[in-house]
Structure formats: C-alpha cells, structure tokens
Image 1 (cartoon, rainbow, N blue to C red):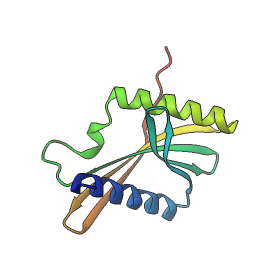
Image 2 (cartoon, rainbow, N blue to C red):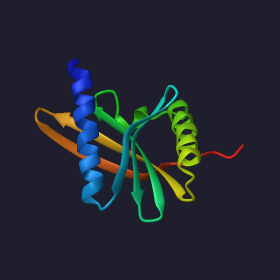
Image 3 (tube, one colour):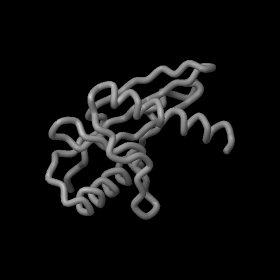
Image 4 (cartoon, helix red, strand yellow):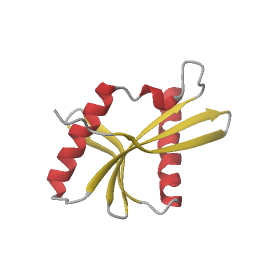
Length: 121
C-alpha cells in the first residue's frame, strides 16, 4: 500500500469514528456495486446516510470536498439505489461528504450533511 492509499484508508477510518461519535450507526464501509463504491453507509435516525470521504494532505489545489464532482455524485446515487434495492429499505437517503485534511499526524475532519441532492430528470 502506497502513502496515498494509507492516507485514504486512515481518513475513512477517522470519518467512520467521527460519524459514530455523532450517534450514527455505521452499516457498511467500502460497499461495492459493480465498479462503484460507497465509502460509508450509515444510519442517522430515519435517514440512510451515504458518505463520501475525501482525504488530502494539502488543500493547495482546493478543499477535499471540491473533488466530489457531478460524475462521482451520479456514481454514488446509482450505488445507493442498488443498496436500497438489495436491502429492501424504505428510508430517506442523504448524501454527506466527510472532508479530511491530514497534517503530519493530525487530521482535521469536516462533516458536510446534505452535501448534494440527486437531480430528478
């Protein structure tokens, strides 16, 4: 595992810890549907939370959350639909981003609930 992968894995672990500290129940991590992946699937009361984690060691090129582009959002929405179908869930879905900046051994976690909404065509 290279340094970038280690940073990402540690960031996802920190994000899951953060969500648990808020009272969320983490249901899945790194859940896959074909080529799509959801970093964290959690439950927050009556919401199914699909959380994308972005970890960076610098914000020189922008904040980590800025890298969740429209294409990534479409992939997350598709995978979330598959998860809901597979588990026969009847919950409202929320898409959050957990943005993490790593500086040395320190991690700054920023949680953005309702970071984006699925577009209806």
